[in-house]
Every structure is written in structure tokens, then in C-alpha cells.
Amino acid sequence: MENKKELRNWLDDFGLDHPLVIAGPCSAETEEQVLKIAHQLKDTDATVLRAGIWKPRTRPGNFEGVGALGLKWLKKAKEETGMLTTTEVANANHVDLAMENDVDILWIGARTTVSPFIVQDIADALKGTDKTVLVKNPVNPDLSLWLGAVERFHTADIKNLGVIHRGFSAYEKTKYRNNPEWQIAIELQNKFPDLPLILDPSHIAGRRDIIFDLCQTALDLNYDGLMVETHHTPDDAWSDAAQQITPAALVQIMKDLKIRKEVSESEDFKNKLNTLRAKIDVADNQLIDLLSKRMKISDEIGRVKKSQNVSVLQTKRWNEILGNMVLEGEQHGLSEEFILRLFKAVHQESINHQEKIMKA
Image (cartoon, rainbow, N blue to C red; front, side):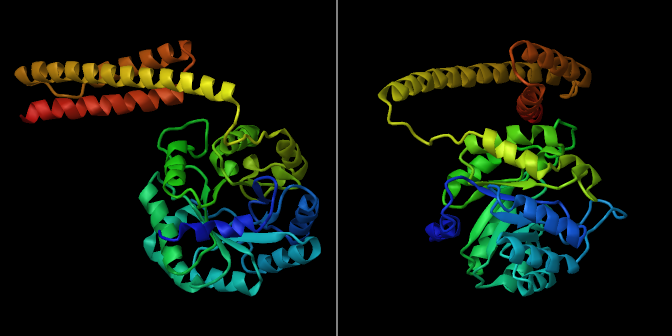
């Protein structure tokens, strides 16, 4: 994308002395509910009121939103509180209805981002608008797909753009509803540092007790804002009850969060940091050397297997390695999630090496 500086203006215009906070219920349920939450958020750090109007669910039969009627509730909440409003749009008709009801920010959901066809239709419907458009990451970890969606809106002359990091689905069950895969968001941030990056901790967490930690990590990584699902009675919410917090809990989280400085002019700080970074560089080089040695051993194993016509994959042996490494990792303060991710990658590279030997 060219002229990337244009993309940041909309966030700068808020003139906030803290990251942007978007808050509100997962779903607009009733007019009373939307207005009550809006008034409870009015005097907090939240600048934008969010609410899902159309709620595509993974499986049919669950609450799928009140539809266009809810847009009138958002508009009324905006008139009464002065908060900006935002909702998800999934097709051109949603765009038209949202624009008619003066919704300020439109977001593109994770299920929509995966389809270039749908994204293009929405981009065409929004062509040239001064509305802000936020693009959630696709359901699966695919940076190109995420950036491609942003580029389609940029090509449609929409300059007020940003992205929402809501985590990625995974086959294996983890402590998260959607794995953060922080490195993907960091890579996006490195490619386009002027593109505002907002964390959706609610969808990553799937439960309210780890929302604070996710928010703090986001601020530590220089994210520009947070989108937190907030409900006046979360346990009674019609959708995603477990991941919503009360407005009072949101206020406490905002008080407890620490905003880090990007840089420090302290010479002592710089010297300590440079020393530690030098140690990291040495450790990284040693790690590469060790991995190279391990792959050379895998090559030898591949030759032995080939000589006896034995298959590359030995499932029993692999499961033993994985179990032992998880236990070993825990003793060294390394999380199970990290060890599994690391050794699965190492194992795949080992298989690739052995496959080359087999085919040679």
C-alpha cells in the first residue's frame, strides 16, 4: 500500500492520551440493554460503543442478532451519550443500513475476511467513504489474506483503515478460545507501522479471567487500542456470555493497565538493554547451531531407515519425545503451548530432511 501515512490520521484525530477503547456488548439484545450499557460506559475511557447487530454463528440455532432494528438503538445511544458507534457488516446491504443510521466505524468480521469476493463487495459499497473501517484477522492464521482485505479497502479509496487482532482458530484445544499468534500481528505491524492495530481480547480469551493479561500484552507490544466486550449482566448475555465483563470491571482494567514508553533516553537503560540483546544474539546463534546439528542426525536416521525400507514417521517414538519434552520444558519454566509448537516445527523439519533422503 502506498501513502500509508494517510491511514493513521483518523486515530490521531481523537486526541486521546491513552489507547483507543471500544466497548459494548457482544450482541445488541434490547433497546433497554444497549442504552443502559452505553450510559454506564459514557464516563469511562471507552470512546466507541460496539454492539453486534447481525451475529453469524458457527452453527445455526443460536441467537443470530436482532437485525437492522438494533441500529436504531445504537443511534439513540449515540445521541444520548455522545459516544461513537461501531458494528460488524458482512455484506453491502449491511453497509447501506449502517450508513443510514450514522454508524461511525464499521468492522469486517473474521469469517468475512476469509472471502475476497465478499470483501470486494463491501469495499465497493463503501468506496470513497470517510467512515472508518476495521478489518479483523481471518479465522485461520494467514497474514496475506488479512493484508489483502485491507488492500481492497485501500484501493476503494477508504483512507480511515485499521485492523483488529482477534486470534486464530486451532484444531488443538488450548487455554484460549482463539490462539493469539502474536507473531502474525507483529509481522503486520512491522510491514505497516502506520496502520492502527487494535486487540480484541474477548474473542482470543473466550473467558473473562484472562482479558487483563491479554490487554497488557497488547500494550506492551504497542497496540493502538482495545475492543472489549462489555455487558451490564454478562452471565445473562444472549451470546458469548463467558467472555464479557461488566463496565465496572472494564474501568478497573483500564486503571490497572500500564502503558509502556516506546523508548528511554537513560544511558544506563540503553547499556543494560544492549548487553542483554548481545546475550540474546549469542543464544540465538547457538540455537541455530544446535538445530543444524539435530537435522544432521535426522539425515543419518533417514539413511538408516532407507537402508531397511522403514517408514519415516514413527508415531510411538514421536509421542514419547513430545511427552518428555513437555515435562522437561515445564521444569525450565517453558509453557506447554510453546514446547508443543516448537517441537512440532522441529519434527516437521526432521521429516522433511528424512523425506529428501528417502527420495534421493
